[in-house]
Length: 377
Ligand code: UDP
Image (cartoon, rainbow, N blue to C red; front, side, top):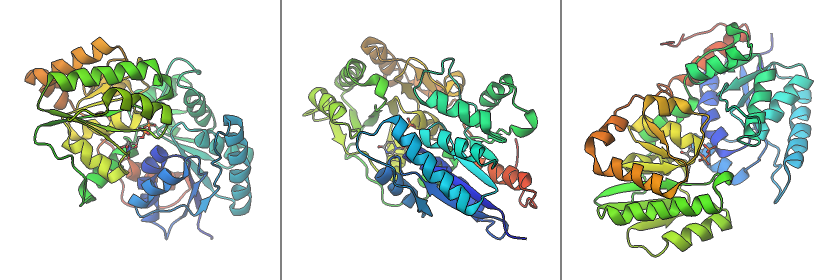
């Protein structure tokens, strides 16, 4: 009997980071199944750099990235490419992760070819298919098609059950991003640290919905906090978009306790997080990773599809109002009890063994012997 073939499809850096532990885990059992890593190259260079961190590179790279291409062009190029690979290799299962256009297209291509699809980081939802755009649509379609759902938390599982998914196909695994972040924290030997003895604040803002005025208010709030707490240094990895850079530089540039830096590669970013006292961020992944290190996050968005952290007390949703950000930041930096309450809250996002749980259920689905049964607590 030939070994079953599993396709793992990624397109962007966050997907690369969260899929890498799954690929590595499946390949630990390469005598049982063959795992092929496919990149659509939706965000090519930063994806490859993140993958390299894990010693991985794509087995097939569709290289669909074009400057200024529309979502329709991303979709059609990726669909053509993935469909051709499925037709050539006839995989037994396609695995996608999260909510990108690549994930939606991988699900659709698998569906068209009657190949089962498994969805990692399933079940995140907002109440509007328009928001975030197009991610909410992408993950809903992935969920519609999936034969196996791997929600990171019980909240995400409930969302899937409310939509009528068969409970026997839904398995809470934790977030594979936590497997990745713990591994990077453990294995990174030569991190970059800012040269500063006091507390370090980290600001990341890249979401399209915050471009322009909201980002201006965010930057002004961060500046106010640095000025009010003279022991702090603010580190700001700058998104490549020139508009974002110009705005951040115009408000935060030239300050002796603010470092505007190129976005660090993943292992260095992880080490930087560990060195920080407080994070202000609109990133999804950072909201999940920071509590793994007991690090409070002020979430610079009005809504989040990751309410578990807010409920657990590891993150606080503060939106983009300048005064609100300053007030919450000041409370955490000035009040040790308030800070400890957030820092000591237990992360709801997993224990670092999510990929083993994914591997176990995938092998079970494929009718393979399932060695090394993971702990499901
Ligand atoms: N990240 C990184 N360097 C940076 C900023 C983020 O390696 O300068 C990592 C971060 O640790 C997380 C992922 O990239 O794993 C999150 O990506 P991003 O914030 O771009 O996207 P989102 O999670 O919002 O989709």
